[in-house]
Figure (spheres, rainbow, N blue to C red):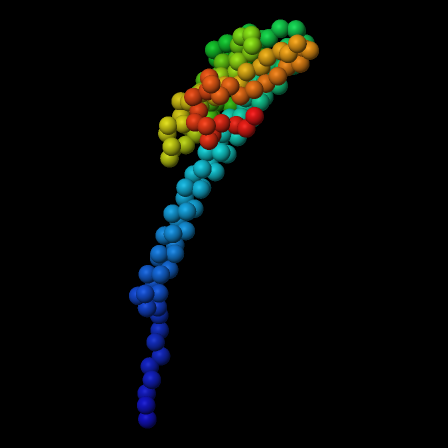
Length: 151
């Protein structure tokens, strides 16, 4: 009578193939995850700038002049009644004619620290018809092009 043994477990080749597949997936997923984290944090910054933009537009329409809120978060809060969260922005100025909102980025990406310290600039100007036009100022911003918001 022939006795057969039933094998249990995985072979070394099967384990190596599984590890290789996991490694390939990780090599693709981790950079994509980091890029999405940066985009999400940039969305937070853009939203904060949009709040200041809306408040400045309202101020201009009510007072027929741009507000004077230079240098600090406190003056922006006092003049425009907008509280800008300081989690992702280390400094913000909003002043001038045309009105310029400049934000210095902070704590955006631990994996790409070159983004921290960059500036994002939005400019508001008055057209001949009195309409306010807002644009992202690519020439004044130091942020890399892939992270700049869409116009």
